Image (cartoon, rainbow over all chains, first blue to last red; front, side, top):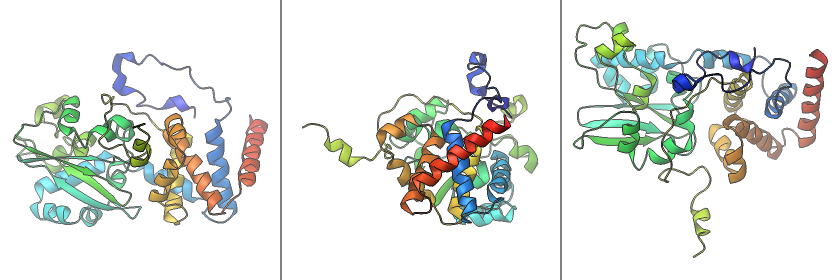
Amino acid sequence: MTAHEDHDHDHDHGTEHEHPHAPIETTEMPGYYDIMEQAFQELMIEKGLIGADEIRHQIEVLDSRNPALGAKVVARAWTDPDFKTRLLENGRTACEELGITFYDLTELIVLENTPRVHNLIVCTLCSCYPRPVLGLPPDWYKAKPYRARAVHEPRKVLAEFGTIIPDDVEVRVSDSTAIQRYLVLPMRPSGTEEYSEEQLAALVTRDAMIGVIPARTPTEGMAA
Amino acid sequence: MTGSEQLLQRLPNDIGGLEAPKIEQTDHQLLPWEKRCHALADVLDFHKIINTEEKRRGVEALGSEMVGKLTYYERWIATFANIAFQKQLITPHELAAKMAEVEDRWRAHS
């Protein structure tokens, strides 16, 4: 496939999206780094350092991970207090209970938002992210402005996402590492007392689990 | 004071707390090679060939200019190559030869 068959490409740009770049022909020579990746991978396989099928398999694993998994975890925590206790104790094993496998050696700490504390996650050094439960991070999470600013002016950062945290609510920023990842457990929106777990999960977005926005309200959920 | 001491205090990746512009809520669907590169990173990590922290430090070792000019996954593959050379898993010559081979193969099939 060509590079520009991607479906969600540039959604955030809204009306600006008028195919800003020329479509890439499939006959175009792959780029230098594309060729380097292919060559590197083939050498690793030829030398027996990795298996021939492992990259393809891992691409399937990556494709199977998306924020719906995290949303399922959050919705379960909202409806099952015992599960929530286990989740806050050990994020990884609680997610594994729901069949979410961790394909790496990372630990997961789940941070609960309350009326007194709002949590935000970042990776100032690079782009560490709870990938087994959320998939790959968005570009802005990996870019300098978010990484640089989230730790010293989180309220301003949150405001840029439209999230205003009252002054009497503490904002806690957790900085991820290669082996220690975080996931935010947002507050359950009011008016959802009768919601099923599935309906609740639909209110939980990727950005709410990063901590830059709250979970959707029932009204927002209906509009989405 | 020349300001050069700042360079000692912070390596290129260590940007937490610095001034930076407004956050642009950007995202893009990975290109096919970028996704392969990500999967490659995971597989290298599984086999303890290159772990996540080694990769991060390797990216840093590319230096500010490359960190600034290469895209995210370009930095990764350049880093994997450098680390594999250092660990003597492959040689620069082998990689160059294999890249030429991949290119020739692509030309022959297109």
